[in-house]
Length: 148
Image 1: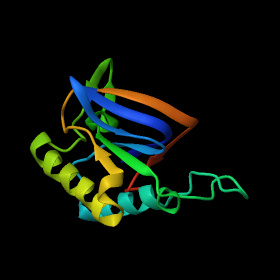
Image 2 (image 1 turned 90 degrees about the horizontal axis):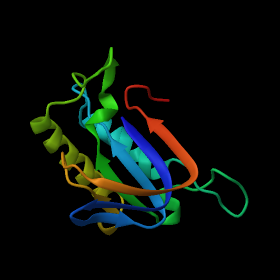
Image 3 (image 1 turned 135 degrees about the vertical axis):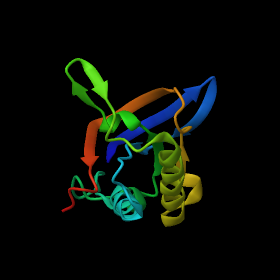
């Protein structure tokens, strides 16, 4: 699952700046126990090609790739969390060891599918402050298990 926000500016700070972008999208990446490399391919393709940006002629006409924009990826296991009473449960999230490897493959695939220097990422499993300027705001959810 990916939560995907159109941005004016994003940065991640942990003691010092870890990653930052200008105009583009920030992707909060949740990794489930069921995810596979096929899910990586689907999500990468959608992130880079979904039309979230306006052109001179109309809204929702241009993608990250069309505009040459930047992408900031942030691993966020809490996307697969749910409430069990008043307690959070994360049993649908992939275990941390496997998720770390999976997230690295996801970021590598983003870079190889687009432009290495336009893809930034945070540190896996680190507590970070994420500073957001959400453009619109425009925020969408992509779920590789619910494809169109």
